[in-house]
Amino acid sequence: MKLRNTCATLSIALLLAFGAFSQHAPKAADAQLLHKAEAIHQRAITLDTHVDIPGGNYDPGENSRAKCTLPKMEQGGLKGVFLAAFVGQSAQLNEQSYKAAYEAALAKFNAVHNLTEKLYPNRCALAASPADVERIAKTGKRVIMIGIENGFVIGADLSLVKKYYDLGARYITLSHNGDNQICDSANNSQHLNNGLSPFGKQVVAEMNRLGIMVDVSHIAEKSFWDVIQVAKAPIIASHSGCAALTANPRNLTDEQLKALSKNGGVIQVVALTDFLAPAARTDAIEKLRKEIGLDKFDTLPRGNRTPEQQSEYAKLNQTFRERSKEINTKYPVTITDFVNHIDHAVKVAGIDHVGIGTDFDGGGGIPGFNDDSEALNVTVELVRRGYSEKDIDKIWGGNLLRVWRQVEKRAAKK
Image 1 (cartoon, rainbow, N blue to C red):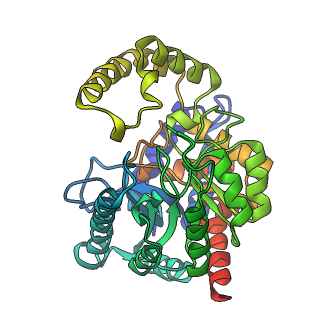
Image 2: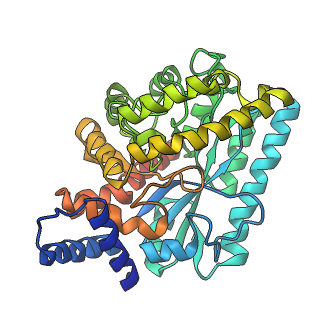
């Protein structure tokens, strides 16, 4: 697909605005760099491993409000996305909550199948394997893949892992914000399982058996190390950052990045401000949260709150949003910070173990890479920093496809 001239024009403007080009470089060099990046971008199988499915009547064909839509993918030269069937964490781990989570997950699966089979089968298609990804990409259609965000939807029924696989799920994020029956979470953890639960170990084994990638984004560090011990195939972190650059509990430490590399896995760097921000911004935000009193809700997940507590949270959160605007202005986070995290992950884990997972429509989006139409800007910045076409191919999708193939190969041995 030939990238639109408008995309190139916007890219130059954005890159100049955010300092991706040197202020002293001649314009001819800027144009040459952009031309090289466009060619690389067009040839690469550009994949995003984490995009949330918005609620309501999901129609990404002409939905200009969403960050991930078919027109924006086409404009930005993004070949494919994993749409995440996200279900939030409940405070209760019982038959009733599991049933509700299962039904919510099925609704998300139905939305994706409706997208690819009924709404826009001439513009996109569902991929269930790396071979499907490559085949569909060659046709010019957008490649749609399915992930599950929060293993809570498995409930206590291990057979549901196969059910979700048959519906198209090719990765499962083991938890979300709060401990579940599988493992402890990086956020709002009560240390319910002290890492990966006995049932969680069965879930990982079943995912390996079927050929579903194990996703460690959102899980607690102890849970991560337990997964490293029991997983028989490479794992992924579908949307995470580097803790060495931004001290967020959702980010991976250098020790985790090294273990991920040894495992053969891949970290998909997320384009979300809180996971990319410099330490000064993180400290300022945390100070404000404590000053307002919002931090007391860190150990009180949404499902555990009374109506009065939820009302208080809403008021405090509104105050926080207003007062944090000044901090966001003082410490802006842009595509430069995003690629800084890619740089760090490459340095620590290696070029074969880094990819991209934006979390668009789930909080992701930064100046310079705020939606799919701006995907080319990432390639331009990578070219500017000296990455080769081979390296950029790996980051944009090659590494993820390699992991997926290895997970498939491991499943085939069973």
